[in-house]
Length: 234
Ligand code: ATP
Image 1 (cartoon, rainbow, N blue to C red):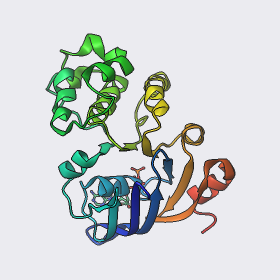
Image 2: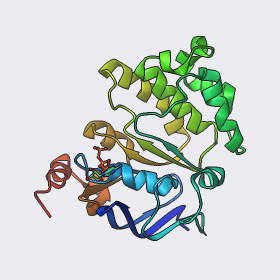
Image 3: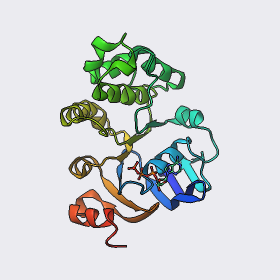
Image 4: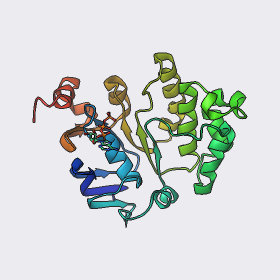
């Protein structure tokens, strides 16, 4: 059985259809990357899967349960967690409290306050600092740590490198290694194609809200993905 089964998913911003008739299936442990130019609908798709943006049509089935109409917090409780674009931390709260808020949705599993800090040791000296005072890379670590605290079965990662220096990006990905080693099921949006190919098992190329190509990462070339990225092969 698929962990996630999406059929005919549509999401709109007003009159604009940002996600059009998307079908996706993800097995436990699989890592899917969504690739596409700015505005292709990647963020809207992740937000719709997480329940932050409403689905206008279609179905999202998670572990055999139709979650399409469930609010975001109930999806988190079932094991879906989003690391949102822009991180969305509680900036005036401490780092420790930003991590602890996720305890409300904590499920049994390997991740807890201590194991998250072991994965992101750069946060240990910052626990009492206001989250908003941290560097971009450290804030991203808090955002990922907060999602991990819930012990997700499916983690949705939206552009974790956005706005970070190359050194900070490397730091975030180094910390992600312990997560990747657990084979957590992932849907990832990442602009850096080299990283995308090194992490993902499967790639889906989005253009104007539709999946225009998809395949196993080992069977798609970067040139192919780039062509779809810019819409040359539609
Ligand atoms: P990016 O890489 O820039 O985040 P994306 O692939 O994630 O792009 P979305 O952010 O999902 O794409 O945007 C899809 C479409 O929806 C775009 O045309 C965008 O302009 C539009 N859109 C996104 N958010 C809103 C919003 N809050 N209100 C109106 N239109 C929006």
